[in-house]
Image 1 (tube, rainbow, N blue to C red):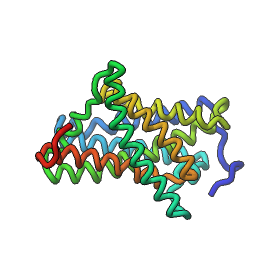
Image 2 (cartoon, one colour; image 1 turned 90 degrees about the vertical axis):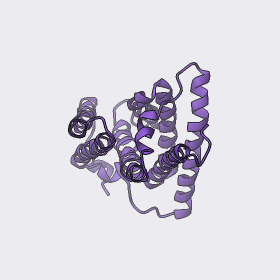
Image 3 (cartoon, rainbow, N blue to C red; image 1 turned 45 degrees about the vertical axis):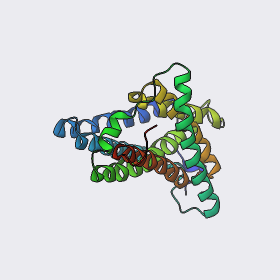
Image 4 (tube, helix red, strand yellow; image 1 turned 180 degrees about the vertical axis):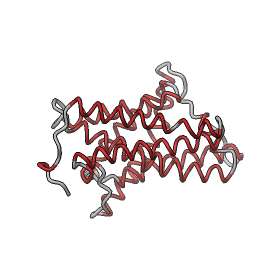
Length: 241
C-alpha cells in the first residue's frame, strides 16, 4: 500500500482534467450499443454496462498514475467480518428506507414522483432479462462500478484537493450531489433521493474503515431487491403499491 508521500499531489486543474475525462469516456462508451441495437433492452443494458467499464478503466489509469489506487479502491478482504457484515446489512436497510420514505417526501415537496419506469420496463420483460439486469447492472455496473467510481475514485480525488483536504464532510456532500445528477432521467425527485443515498454511502465508507465491499454489497442488494419486486409486481405475485 502506498504511503502518503508516494501519492502525487492533486491540484484543481488536474482534478478537473481527471473528472472530465472519466465523464467524457463514460458518455462516449454509452453510445455504440444504442446505435447498434437501438433503444431496446439489449441496447440499454449493454450501454449501461459498457459505459461503466470504460469509465472505470480511465479512473483506474489516473489512480494508478497518481499512486492512489490502493487507497481509493480498497477491495481487500475485510479483517473484521462481523463489522463489515453489519455495515452492509445496515446500509441495505437504510438505503431501502430512503427509497421508500424519499419517494413520498419528494412528492410532498411538490416534485414529480421518482420515475424508474424506463429501467423497469426492460427488467421485467422476462426471467432472462431480470437475471441479466441483476448481474450486469445491479451487481457489476451499479454495485461494484458505481462504488468504485463515486465513493472510490471521486471521493479520494476530492479529499486530496486544496481547500477540501481534511474536510471530509465537504467531500462527501460534493460526491453525493454529483452522484445524484446523472439520475435526472428519474426526475428531480430521483436526483434528490439518489443524492441522499450518496450521502449515506459516503458516510458508510468511513464507518466501514474505507473498505468498499460493504458498500458494494448494500448498493447491489438494494438494486436487486427493487428489480425483483418490480418483476414480482408485473407477474402479479405481489400487489403494486
